[in-house]
Image 1: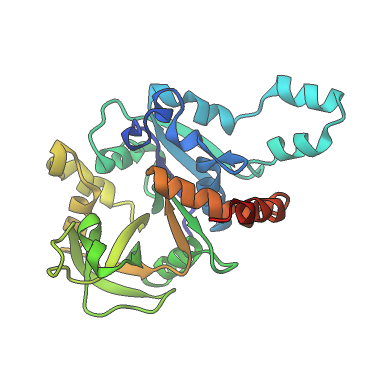
Image 2 (image 1 turned 90 degrees about the vertical axis):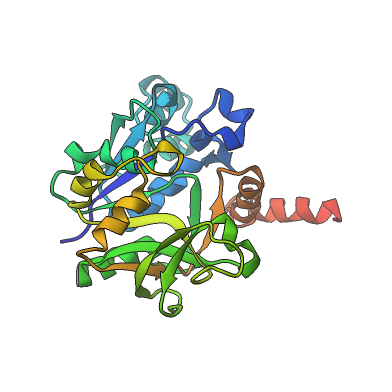
Length: 292
């Protein structure tokens, strides 16, 4: 059975993005002409997801509003014959896709955020997409789609990874694998080592923030004790899952941008800007004009 549900944890306060995130959810900061969260939702939809579950916080209502209809705005645009703009705002979500919100009452970690969606997920297997990370596809069949396909074939949980320079491994969660798979392929993993010291890392493959997980991980999360930072860690529950099930690392083909960091965000704006169908050529000219 294909994966149709995706959990997007958006309750974090975005301290790496202050001062902007003091009053704007970091997920709503625009990358070119649309909020970062829209790119992540579109990635999920392109992979066949039909239900987006936002695990949210009281300060993040603008995210829910963005994916809802806005009668006053739509009526105004229609009266002014601005049909191109009307089309853009009414087609953010296809009609077959729904967005549901659930609150995370306390900031108790990623594992806890995923667990907050337990009642909505039910007995279905699901995807988790961390919205800080944008994944720019290298292929019409996006990486998430290929992960779902692999999960459907093998029933092995999938964790997206990408190769990072050896001198940066101490900044990431690194997977322990017997060998490095080719891009677009998966390999069984022994575990995840959080921020290993340079020279001690089991590989150079870092966890990206995309997961395909079985429904039973929810029962494991309920039993997961608080770990690093006094939070319930998803990686601890995945380690428990590995006692009984195969968990695979999927090496991505595309490119990632960490929009939770300011420099990662600027990098995303550059890459998405030069590829923008309407603004790309003019944006490239502006960059050339800078004569850096």
